[in-house]
Amino acid sequence: MTAGLRLLLVATVALVMTAGCGKGEKTAGANAPENISGFTSWNSFTAKTADGNEFTESNFSDHDVTVINVWSITCGPCIREMPAIAEFQKNLDDNVQLITYCIDGNHYPDEAKRILSDSGFEGITLLSGDGDMETFTEEIQYVPTTIFVDNKGNIVGEAIIGAYQDLERRYQKSIDDALKTLGK
Image (tube, rainbow, N blue to C red):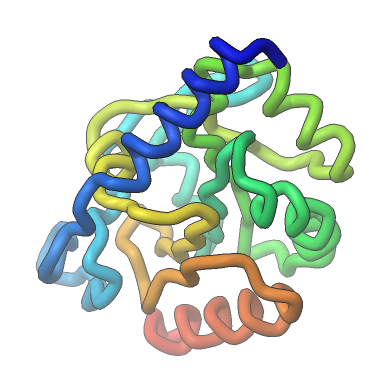
């Protein structure tokens, strides 16, 4: 990697990581679960996936809960936890899906795809988006950040910020809590 590319990556991550977290409840609709995360829910957006497809909030509708892991190609902890995420994703119940969102993947799609391939992740990865996804991106301060959304894109429960060795246990507890909140 050239020095110029490295500097651009550092500047991109620094910009994302210094954006202020949103404050307060941000949900849509009267029947939406309480959003205690402080981040904007993903109720209206269009995203580009790593395989060139489109992904919108309507892609949440077939699952009670969607786990969204937000990461960066410059984040060592993000990359180190990706094999555990890949393994966890393979064992999910049908009513739960896990996707990833590489915040700098739009600028470096080949590098993002290499990291995903090396980790064994075969699921959906978002590389860029607009609407609520773009607003969310401006709000986060750290990667990895993982959120849990219902079938309409409303954030359910608290975000998991940082990488953890007990990823499977932490994710499963958050999924179980989300399902309980949703009455599932």
